[in-house]
Image 1 (tube, rainbow, N blue to C red):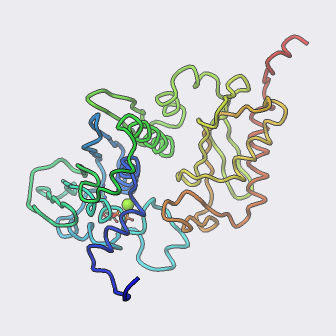
Image 2 (cartoon, helix red, strand yellow):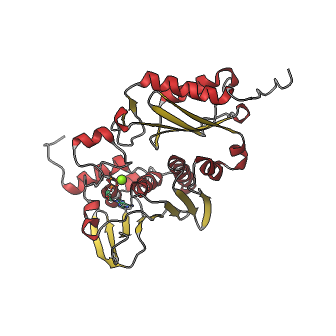
Image 3 (cartoon, rainbow, N blue to C red):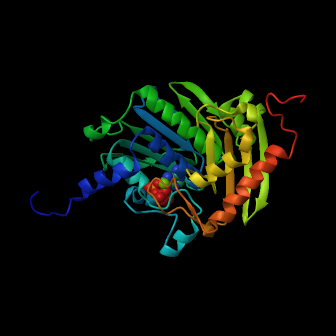
Length: 337
Ligand code: ADP
Ligand code: MG
């Protein structure tokens, strides 16, 4: 094994990058979340068919020229300033790792302008090295283009699936992000073709844009308050049940999460409406005081913990049940009996 040595910063960067970006979809996730955090009302994701280039454009607050290079430093963030802030996370980002991680394993170009500045700033970074930095004309907001992901880490590149599969993941991820922030208009374009565009006017419109009219027409709205939380969204009528778990989305304070307890609560609410081996469709938003949720548990931030877990789960189950049974839900095959 040899002697122990402290890694040089470049290698540290490559190791850290692997934790944050493992494929094009995670690049899209990080960049779109940054756009959301920047207060954008419009976010556009444009990829080419081969996924050699990923562009995310927003009309958010932009980055001041003096901060542009700092944004690419590891652990540099404008979103938290001290440990106490970790107790009340209200932004998607807070680790200050995404931009430096992406820039370590790709060729990145960032163009940005804060609304009241005369001009904007452009920076290009390749494999962690700044290769260009200058003033440019730019609309207010930020555009980041990521090219040749993993060009300098062949081992990682080999883990990528075919462009078609990776594009599927990008599409799923972008849809999920759009459903998480239905107040923001999100557009996805691939190879010159628009895949979807949400209106930014609420969840109903976002669900229709992403899943289509037929699914949207078969949904029951959920809206309830209790246990210090608020639950809103849609669940599928029993005739919409599916053979796979796709189409199941839980958001906690706008953040997509996988939470076995929350998902189980939905299944329990359906009860006997759910044929064996079938899965319900749902898009649900749980909103509660950030002080009662811990999202600081995993780099990918998919898991959360609640302070009052049992109460929250019982509330969610009850709210979905009420949505399903509170109105005349027809159970297939029982009509007229
Ligand atoms: P984090 O999001 O955890 O703070 P990032 O590496 O993703 O870390 O971004 C670093 C910083 O760069 C952010 O804290 C923010 O100040 C700035 N930034 C990144 N993307 C944008 C954007 N689209 N608009 C405005 N500022 C941005
Ligand atoms: Mg970020």
